[in-house]
Length: 574
Image (tube, rainbow, N blue to C red; front, side):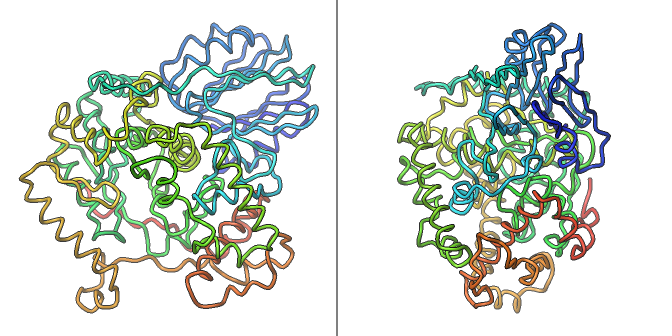
């Protein structure tokens, strides 16, 4: 479901149309001084002139029929768990209440100007100029930070927010109903698993067995065995990762599915995926808000059908330490943040006018300092920073914005009770997958019957795993092949072992260059050889795609260049 709210104006219908990617039948309700629109798929209650609209996949639902006015909405809606965004219009008091889930993962965007308030599920519903500080974060980190978006004047509503807008006074009040837990020395593993089991049971109430997006890593196999334990007849879809490690990820996923006795299907992207309509669909669904060209994450949505998908994003950021080295922010930024002399910032200097480049970099740095000041400068504080920034503004975009255009996203662990425990886990406890291995050995030992590929690291499930040592040799060979591709192609027959994607036809310099763009340097030589010019072309692609999408022209401009959808027929099933 998509939401569009415009109080103090009449653009709710237009806002909804700009978000409608699936030709769904929209609904529109006029309210005093404005309108509220929504697309199918969520919860809608109307009573005595009041209106409640909930997008996302909430669980632990309270009695929503008990909400009779804005005060009830403020009290009842924060009781929900899961990823959701809710708006409630109280016609009698002419007040609007907006509530986000406790981590703010289900997107809800806010735009204010005197006498007006807009809320939407996508930024493309509220066109505006680019926010250069946010684009600086896009360049340096691959995602925005805090509540900024790539659209100037449009901000993301904060996590665990209760916003109350009085349309008579044009005043907004905000309060928050959940806080990140304090560190603890001891962790109750049984309570953690109990919270996961509870959320699985709650998602099962939707009556959809769903499909597990299964990889060779920890997170999806944990979900797989939680579903098996609960007796849910889910299937698994494995998107082959043919361009990395001879698809070790896909092979491990198929092996663990067989071990669990779960029917599974392996699917593959076409070599021309990044020139396909399916890739354009991903760009539109994601609001073009994160880097996606040549990335695996952009390939998954094409294989999602109606119903529900089970996704392991929550355990992935709580039971291990993705994108986080030991230490505080200095170590984190050294590893994850691109500095001014990096290839990507030199590409930005080539692409943009000097004053634009400076505003991007300086604005990002100022935002980064403000955001880091909110957290402790240690492993615990950096973990919270990563969840509230990278996870919220990049990783969670896939399940809660992209996938939910097609299906419900079931994400076990998306409850306050789970995070009250998981949020206390120390960095050291989770480092090197220690906690994950401990949890699986205690509760789901069969999940470790097959080696694990966690990121780019092969994890040994037990001291005497023959499969681990065989696959370690294959992974090592794949790394060597990546370092010497020409030699590898001579030694290995063509096919999946040396799979690579075709260059995108969307990287058309004549199309991407726009002499009327006031932010670009018209003298930039993007035809030059070398990695900086290539990085500048990719950055220009994301810049132009964002402009075309938010101007309603993406399909018009790139559609004629797109080939068939990037999906190929099923590779294997059992």
